[in-house]
Image 1 (spheres, one colour):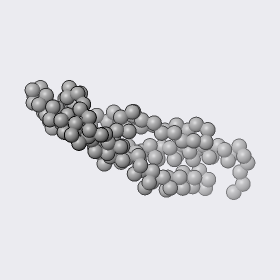
Image 2 (cartoon, one colour):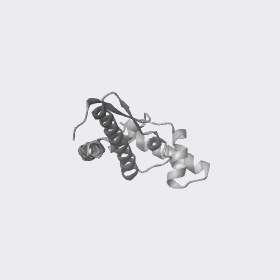
Image 3 (cartoon, helix red, strand yellow):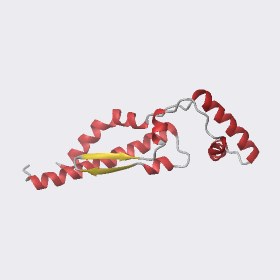
Image 4 (cartoon, helix red, strand yellow):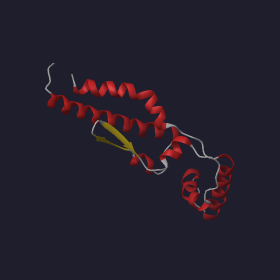
Length: 139
């Protein structure tokens, strides 16, 4: 195979897009399998973009708290009510308040558990995704 510089650059950019899309989908997949998805807010925010010779991934800020967990802190119980209702199928507001308070106290004691969907994807899938994307564009 013989490629001029322009054709090589074009194919390399295509490979970076294939790679970005593959890893983006792996992040979403691992997030769903490892952590579960409540509102899909974080999952739907995962994006990639090609800038120069880089593939840059982004997502909503709370992705880092899912990835690394959090130290003990006391979240406002009010902010947990929606999640509590969905997670435990509770519709009664007083019961949601009670359970949200219990969850907030548990987070205050233990923090939140990490779900390393980013690191696991990079560790398990990065090498194959690079090879497959290059193979797909330079065959």
